[in-house]
Every structure is written in C-alpha cells, then in structure tokens.
Length: 191
Image (tube, rainbow, N blue to C red; front, side, top):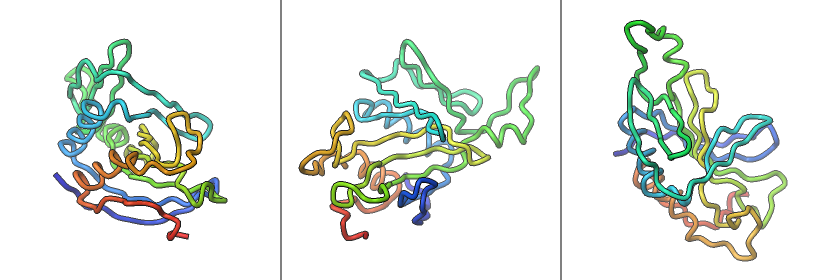
C-alpha cells in the first residue's frame, strides 16, 4: 500500500528547518497506517494535538481495546479514554445530516512526515523532531505523532551517541507506506 509523496523544505515560524514529505491519503490507506501504529507500535508513540500555545504529549502502555470506523471517523478506544479522527466520508445521520462543507473541513486532507531541525542546530545538526502530522480540510492540525528520535532519550535529553535503531518506526512508515528509502542518518551533510 503506497501513495504519492511530495517533498519540500520549509522554514518554520520559529526559524526551524523542516524537511516535509506530504501525501494525501485515502481512507483505507490512512486507516491501515493508523491501525498499524496503534496496534503494533503503541509503545513507541507520543501523540496529541500540537498547535501554537498548546502541545499534548500522550503515551499509552497497552494496545487499544478497540479500533472502529463509523461515518468517516476512526475511533481509538484506549480504555479510560478514547478519541475520534475523521479520515473518511462523513455524512451524519438522517436527523442530523452534516453539511458537505463542514464534512470537508473535518476530514483529514493532508498528512506530513516531518524531520525538523532547530535553528541554530544542536547536537551536530541533529533533528529535534521526527513526526507525522494529520491536517484537516482547512489545514488545521488534527494530531501529531512524535516518533522516536535517535538523538534523544525517552525524556528528550540529548544522547551522547546517536541510537540509529530509534529510526525503525520512522523508516517503517517511509518504506512500507510511502515507498521511500530508509533514512540511514547521520544528517550533518544537509547543512
């Protein structure tokens, strides 16, 4: 299962350098990817909304109780709490139909795989973030998945020596879903 990917480099509002691999997924593609992340890689995920002024960094210690799909929404039930992501066609029901414009707004329209470098660079030009962000039809962020970073430990402290094994999930997404080559690291040559 692969999709078309567009690559670009951007400068973030904070001056960071962002390497972006963007794709517009179909529902089946995105559902398969999200199920894979939560069912098989939950221990490696940190996720939540990330907007200017607020970042949620949620982690789970067990796979979801259930993942279901109804009326365009993927629901991930984590036991004590759950969340919904609109990844498919959303219509509402007979008594409360959803207007088409609102349905387009809610639905995930873009996904970005991001490798972000702080400005000025730290740890020998180390990326500060490996992540995947889902954006809705108005380019508002829905959720970001922060993936393991070879330059940082689980508490985001800089490691003395990079642990390239931490790129396993990043590379799994790149190779299995996007048809890209694995990132070997290091990336000092990008500057």
